[in-house]
Amino acid sequence: MLTITDLHASVGDKPILKGLTLDVPAGEIHAIMGPNGAGKSTLANVLGGKPGYEVTGGSVMFRGQDLFALEPHERAAAGLFLGFQYPVEIPGVSNVQFLREALNAQRRSRDEAPLSGGEFLKLAKDKAGLLKMDMDMLKRQVNVGFSGGEKKRAEMVQMGILDPAFAVLDETDSGLDIDALRIVGAGINSIMRSPDKGVLLITHYQRLLDVVRPDKVSILAGGRIVETGGPELALRLEAEGYDSVMA
Image (cartoon, rainbow, N blue to C red):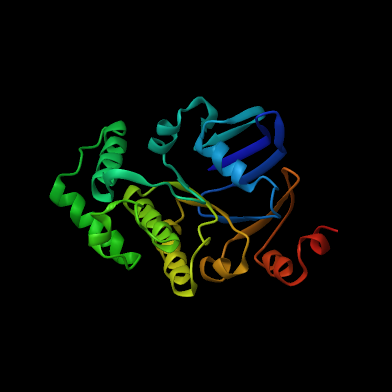
C-alpha cells in the first residue's frame, strides 16, 4: 500500500532522511521508533507534503500512484491521512464546519454525493462517541482552547470521519494521560485495523503499542531504517534503550 524506496530529504541545507526504505502493505500497522533527531517527524511531513521539506532522492508509491506527483490535498483525497505531533489551531472555524467541508471535498473528488447537514452530524456523533468526545467539543473552533489530550482525541475523530485508507500518525500519544491514551489507542484500532487499510505509527513509547499492538516495529536512526522486527523489538527498546539495541 505504501512503498518507500531509498528516500532522501532535506530541511534547508540539512539532509535528514538518508536512504530510507520501508514497505507497509494493506492490513498492517507498522510502528516507527527512534531517538530524537532521527528523522521520524521529517518522514511524516514529507509523506504529507508539508512545505519546507525538499525530497532530493528516492520514491514513494501510494496505492499504485507516485505520491510526490500529488499535491497535499490530492494525497488526502487519495486516502492519506496525516496526524500531527502538534495539531494546529484554526480560530474562527468550528470543527463541524471544517470536517464537513473536508469530507465533502474528498467525496466530490471521488464523484460521490456530498453529505447533507443531517447525515454529517449523525456520522460525526458516531465517530465522536468512539473517542468519548462530547459533540459540544466539535462545535468549538478547531483546537482553540483544547488541552493537548483533547487535540489528539479531536484529531482521531477527524480520522474517523474522513475514513482514510492509510494513516501516518506522528506521536499521537504525545501529551496523553493514561485514560486518554487508552481511548485514542482503541480509536486507532477501531478506525484503522482493517485488511484494506494501513498505518504508519510514529512513537517513542511502548505504552501506546500495548494498546494498538502493531504488526511490525522498525527503528529509524540517522535518517534510515536500521532494524525491523515484530512487537518484541519495541519491548527490547523499552528495556535496553536505543544504544544497546542498535549496537
